[in-house]
Length: 139
Image (cartoon, rainbow, N blue to C red; front, top):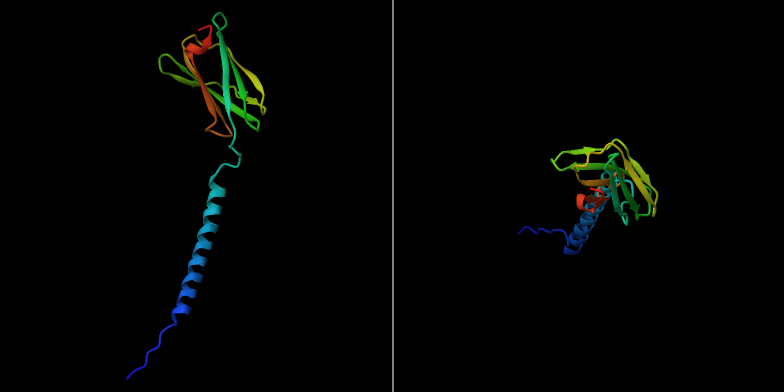
């Protein structure tokens, strides 16, 4: 008769728990490093922008946007103009708006076939707003 002995059930449970904790620690370290490296460095929480209005002057082709940064940080904006024929152009100008400030964006030489205008933050791409033709005074 051969007497075989195995690992005590108590020791086996302790080893399994220790192994599980080690693997969980490694995964948590990897996940936090991955998140830090892939998420943008700018805090894009509680950030908002609104185009409060727009005017268009037909004789000069001047478009004015009245933009309010309702967030906690200064933002820089790109502007995209969509025309009635479906073309979209990005204006060469960028505008910076301080936190909780209102600023006028002025564009000259804009044809009166504007369909909508979109502004988008360079720092936080999900921070954007648009205004459609019917809300632009003068068109």
